[in-house]
Every structure is written in structure tokens, then in C-alpha cells.
Length: 521
Ligand SMILES: *[C@@H]1O[C@H](CO)[C@@H](O)[C@H](O)[C@H]1NC(C)=O
Ligand SMILES: *[C@@H]1O[C@H](CO)[C@@H](O)[C@H](O)[C@H]1NC(C)=O
Image (cartoon, rainbow, N blue to C red; front, side, top):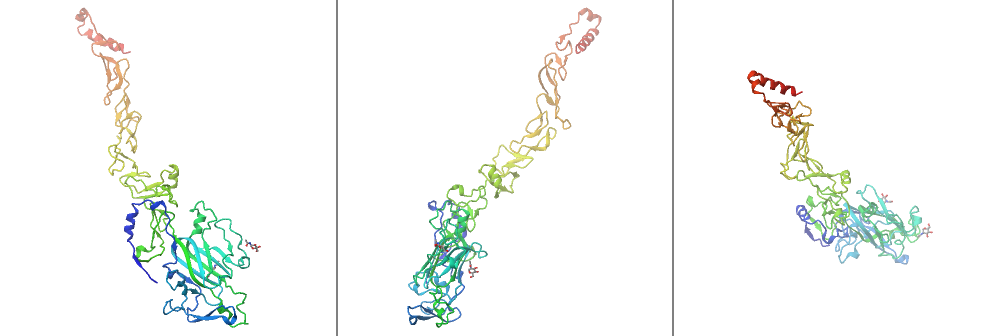
């Protein structure tokens, strides 16, 4: 057997190229099919092998009893085309293109009905079909089962028997109604041919139309970590093994397999078209040509041995199998540069109508929100800076005299919560028509209360509360006449006559003052 070794590229390099190709070449993400047995001699086993402990005799059936020919099997050492052609270990069934492949086969011990052959894979693979090519008669009854949990639990794929109702009475011998029905197939168990006969098992019979290849029941059928073939009944041509009429009749009855092919591929949920060795990162740097490896080189921002999850920081959409279109890709979270971690939140995904399900973790730079899009409480977004600026969150700085809510402001506009008669982003100004901002004033500012008869507007000075008075009017509220005028709100000049003035030098002014005061009422 010729082994050619290729050097496996370091994982980091693969990671790098993967960032630049989001789609599989040609749009199709199907890894290549191959024989899962190739390169896995150490992972197949048989419960019975002829000559493992030392030479054993076996015979082949001739048409006459005297015509039978007998041979020796000795499997203590592996097969070697020059020195050890009598070795019939299970590894002989792996397909090679050696010229002597017809000389090489696996054989069970004589007369043992219950024999199983098992392949243990290192991860989940996708199974396509199984072909067994027998050197002996095919078994009168057998079954194929698989495990998806590394051999913890097993599930039968299919039963095979010439007489299904005799060998597997509880199993239906009818054609299956759906792809996942378990049936007994009698097509592959006849006594003809006596050598070279095949048993074939397809994971998915093309008869059934598969609507969604990623439906759970279909995935269940085509994925496995282990496959086991149980031969349960030898084909004995009517002999009973315990018959004493002949000498050692059972040495003619055994299972012998030239070849077993477990066709499959790595299982990547539609997100890769190439696979590398599972333990590639752990120093297993050589790999056999033609071997089907199990570690997917994931596309579409997926990750995991089988691309069964989204890559870190790509949880804005839920993971889906398929990869047929961009809707099945894992999308990057948007955290505005304030976090490198996120998770998928189904509730948010639904609430946004399927737009975004990513929730950022541990936002930096004083930020919060599912996309770190908001500033934390008591801070707000500086309108001069962009949302991804690490310094964009600045303090609300609300005026304690004018604001409520202990200084909380709107995270976007920075607007503080103002008392009733206060305004401004910081709540630091009285509203027009109010004055005297004070912390101990529940409404923040007092009304100007300008006298409409004496003022030109309702607005007063913010601090002192001085209203804007008409001419000849005075007072904070503009509710009195200036000195020398009387009769608010008309405020006529005090026109005292000269005579009286002479008489009441000071009295006339006094009188006018009096009259002005009276007119207030
Ligand atoms: C197949 O054989 C193994 C032993 O080799 C046995 O444990 C298992 O139960 C058998 N499977 C069935 C379905 O009989
Ligand atoms: C199934 O088995 C029954 C006998 O148990 C037989 O009558 C019937 O023809 C079989 N059906 C098929 C499709 O082989």
C-alpha cells in the first residue's frame, strides 16, 4: 500500500482565508464524498476474526463433498502480499487500489453466527451509503445500525434477510412509506452469488422526495459517529452446524468480506465545502490522501467542528443550517465598537421583526443598550461626536435648582427633566414669564405676574423679576406711575397750579403723590 503524506496547513492560516470568502465557491457548500474507512484502519473492529490467536483451518464448499478445499488462516500479523497472505484481519476490507486486492479479505471464525463489524469515527459525519462485497455467501440475516453519540445509543438503519418474517418477525417487510421508516430488505440475502455478492444500504432512498434536507428527521438519518454491521445468521445451505453426520461441517460456514465502503463526507450543516483533520491543531500533521476528514472549514460566519453554531460575535441572526442564501448566514453583531462579545436573544429578534437579535455584552465607554447604542444613565451622547466615538458620552450636568430626577437626562438629547417653570437642556433657565430660579421652589421659578395695564410684555427679568414697563410706569410689576405722574394706569403729569404751589410749596407735590397713591386703588 502506498501512503502519500501531505502537510496540513496551520489552522491560523485557514482562519485567515476564511474571513475573506463568505460563500463556498460556486455557491454550493457540499463537502466531497469519500470512503470514511480510508485512513481509519485503527478505528474498525470485528468481534470475530479467523486465526487471530494462531492458525485455523477453514474450507470452501465444493459441489461434491469430496471436492471441498481447505486452507489455513493466520491473522496474528497483518496482511503482507509477500510474507503473510493468510492474514484476514478486519483492516483488509478497506478499499485500496493495490493489484492484489482480490487476495485480501476479512474472515470471521468458523461457525459463529453473531458477528459484528464496527467503525468508530472521531466526530459526526454525514453518511451516504454502505456497500459490502462478500467473498463468502452473504449472510442469511443481518442488520446495520448507527450511533450519533459515539456508541452510547444505537439505532437500526435497516434489516436484511432472505426470510424477513422468520429472522425479524417484528420488522415490516413492506416498502417504506417515508425516508425514516425501518424495514427489512430481502433483496440482498439470497444464496446467489456464492461469492462477490453485495449488500447495499443507502441513507436516503432517492425514491423519497426530500423537501428539506435539514429537517431533523433527515439529519437524524444521515449523520452518525459510529456504524455497526451485525451479521446474525450464516447461510448454511441446509446444513445444521451441530450435525454429526459430517466431520466439522461448520468449517465451511463463516463470513468473509473483500471490501466495505462507507461512503460519506464531513458534516457541515451546509456551511462548508472543505474539511480538515479533527485533531489538526494537536500535532497530527500528516494525513492520508483520500481520507475524509471531519473538521469543517466553516463559511458564512459559522464555527464548530460541524459548523453547528455561529462564530463568536456573529449572533445578530440565529444559527440555521443550510447556507443556501444569505439569510442562513450568521451576521455580525453591531456594538458600535464598544464591545467584542454578544449573544443571540430570540425575544429581541422577534421584537425587531427578524432584523436584529444580537445583544452586546459588557459595553465599554460608559455605554449600554443591546448594541451599546446609548450612554449610561446620567450621561448623554455628545452631539459633536459619532456613536462609535469612545469619548462620546458626556455628563448630563443638570442644574440641581431647576431639574428633577436627581440629574438624569435623555441619553440622546441630553435633556434634563425640568421643574414646571424651568427650561433649557440643563434646566438652568426660568421659562419666559418666570423668574428667580431656586432649588427650594418646587416649580423652580415664580411667575413674573406683570401688570398687563402697565407692562409691554408678560416677560420679566430672569433674576430680579423686573417687568418691562410702559412709559411713566414703574414698579417690579409695572403697576405704579413714576414720580410726577398720577392716576395709574393713565399716569398723567401732576399739573399743580402756580398759586397753590406758592401756597403749598411742598404741599402740591405731596397732594400729587397722594392722588397717585389713591389712584392705585
Ligand atoms: C449488534 O451486536 C452487538 C454486539 O456485537 C449487540 O450489542 C447489539 O445489541 C446488536 N444489535 C442489535 C440490533 O441486535
Ligand atoms: C411480507 O411477509 C408476508 C408474510 O409474513 C408475505 O405474505 C408478504 O408477501 C411479504 N411482503 C413483501 C413485500 O415481501
